[in-house]
Image (cartoon, rainbow, N blue to C red; front, side, top):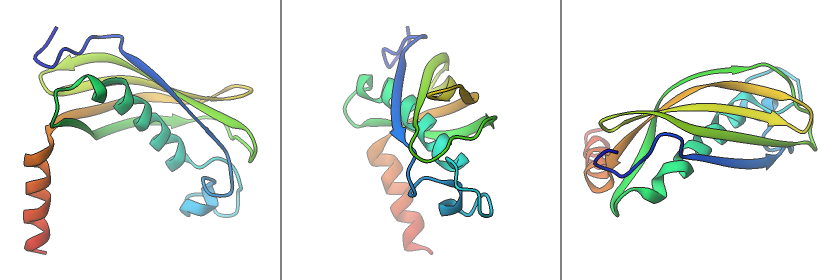
Length: 135
């Protein structure tokens, strides 16, 4: 148990369909190959991790991604569904550690680890706004 009532093992699954909007060519990450983009896979993994814990945090708190170590190991064509799973594997104060994995309808397409940090939303947004004033 910790200050935020989060528990190891909390998990969430999210899903998306591969379309022309989330293929590698849309992100500029893969020449002319029209398959599910690595940035889209990573975003889906991050979404799963955030959804696994954010709703359990006190009002005014959220998490932000701070580190990724991801492998994209198989291509997924347009039309297939991709499912990402995130499982809370460790807690160190406000730092959260997740095991993440993504699969299409045929096979595992990616896996790795992801870290998120618990923030106090108002303070975080104040810092962002202050940064924007000096830009």
